[in-house]
Image (cartoon, rainbow, N blue to C red; front, side, top):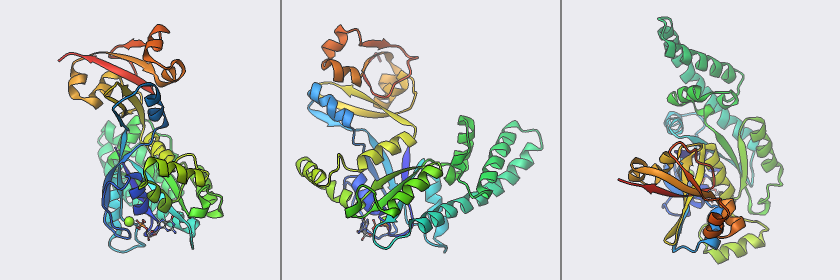
Length: 346
Ligand SMILES: Nc1nc2c(ncn2[C@@H]2O[C@H](COP(=O)(O)OP(=O)(O)O)[C@@H](O)[C@H]2O)c(=O)[nH]1
Ligand SMILES: [Mg+2]
């Protein structure tokens, strides 16, 4: 699962990327190069678990992010940039909301670029699917139905994500790389004196996202990038001075995780406390497989409890005594926030 950071040129995409990846990848600001990296997902529940279970190591879940080149206004580079965007699973659109900016124009030109590019794909695909469907091919008829629905939305200048799609439809949309069907989060990149997003520009981004089936977050990319370089104590001091509870990359990374259809489970022992990303509603053996394929193969059962039980009862012993330690089999659907010990035999 991969999230693409998109937007026009020089709006702070790479700066946001450095903040999300905590400077683990060397980048060049203002460059047109894609950058790939791994972003740790800041997780207050993970930190809280370690108050009750003392561990040598604490390992957060991570998210794959790619900082894509800015969408140029027309020109021959456009198709190359769009090809990158087709391949990611979710989009994070950075919108310039500092200095001289016009978020209305920027979002409109970015989103219409995506809509027009999708229309080209849909037109070609619809022709082809129609021809195949004529011979009674049921799969092709499904494709025709989905593509026609997308076409109607696009013609109304609406993104495909505004439609209602079942899992099968979504697979079809993904196979064609329909960009406007991908979940989108709009990031209002504000100046350092507008970290709460009170400016008209930031408010516009939030309203636009809400009206167009997307989500939004307010971030000051330069500040976040600086915060990501500090050690824990200095971070806390800096956040307090700005009346912020946590760096904005926290809510952003968590929102992206949710948009990608992921949830989190934990493993917790003296050696390490660790958060793992997992497909929402995955069965227990699949969760085991995220840790190691052997654990999935030799899955016997999952001993688990919920983080909230740990927070209220404060120890695994008390959880056991309260009868909250569950033994779950291979058909168990993982719940967000489960703390799990997998028993397996290979
Ligand atoms: N004042 C201000 N400058 C920013 C902010 N975010 C990025 N910049 C600057 O804008 C320029 C382009 O940033 P970059 O991240 O490379 O943009 P990209 O082209 O979208 O990747 C750099 O000089 C950044 O320092 C911000 O929030 N405030
Ligand atoms: Mg860049």
